Image (cartoon, rainbow, N blue to C red):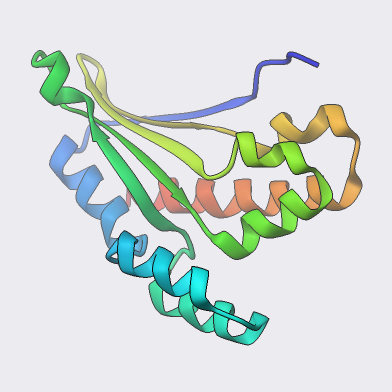
Length: 155
């Protein structure tokens, strides 16, 4: 079952700050502690949908956490964002429990000598070994949304 995920990578000549700012502008950035509290206390699907709907950005994921790898590397700017939508994650995990090992999605924004690289692994390839058509469809849709989000960073 150990298969590498297909990786989406884009490179552009925009500045690191411009790319990061653009990605930040389309993802929700709620207070994660308050968000998780509200998710945990939602008793009905409608409540959960309302909580998530208030938190998501225009591209539908929210930022759960970020790691400033550049602070460690000190030779270049690099940020790892862990983003997702709990409702989409739930749809995958209900069908393939192990999807929880891969969701939410990790996006790497990394400044290199040839430009700023933005990359992530495609969720659908993670779920292929389970051969679950419904989970794969949700994962492909998620991949499409994330690719659109990343593509928007270059406009």
